[in-house]
Image (cartoon, rainbow, N blue to C red; front, side, top):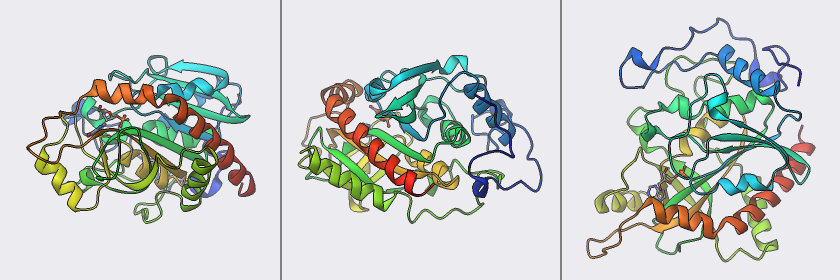
Length: 325
Ligand SMILES: O=P(O)(O)O[C@@H]1C[C@H](O)[C@@H](CO)O1
């Protein structure tokens, strides 16, 4: 594919020329804790995008992030071209079981997509900007809509293991402590210094998802609620979970929120869903303990339904995109 540069990006609105070029990457070693606040420059991200374009035949319109144990979402992709994270210059690598570590390009129902089979988490040691770097790369590749999926613990007492929660909103707990993927100098070519988040999860797409759930006859397991992300890697204490429940959280996980913030900052449409893989333990009398094996098992158990659901959503979201180019 022809390379892109700062002047021929699809969405001119979101990529107005910057007043000045920001300094190149501050190395993670710079402050010792991996929390460099500058991130990669626009130019470095363009290089990554151009590297990918040189290896693929179709530019993606929709990006999918596969949650823990949900990598099989990428198996529906036809005409697929996979690129391992290790082979992409300046790309992080996956270190968590259930995250394969590759980008899969191709089509779902004729719609050009890219799926991340493996996301990056803060607890792996990556600063939040680096966890979200692929979202900016997707934007540079021409993606208009992000579908983020995750595994999460159910806090809402009406949720059952295997339910699918359409994310209506999030609470950025890590942001309360000042940890935000947009922390550091802002490059206006991606988006504004102070992006709004009151419409983070596209209302129309959420309604479409509810319609699709009915059409597929899975509306009994599809819910809608509020997600939060904690830093992990430990699962939460009983007191923490009770606090989250009190403030209105329906499902808790360790991802997605920062990806969505990054996506909205660069004006992507966002849809997200959580697979409820375990019921959060909110009483000391309950002897259950959350564990990653169960999370992966539930992902496997629900893989066919999730694939069907996400495939239909891709089809429907692409129709909306076509109406609003
Ligand atoms: O990548 P996601 O958010 O789907 O993964 C969740 C959170 C942890 O990474 C892991 C815990 O089992 O699953």
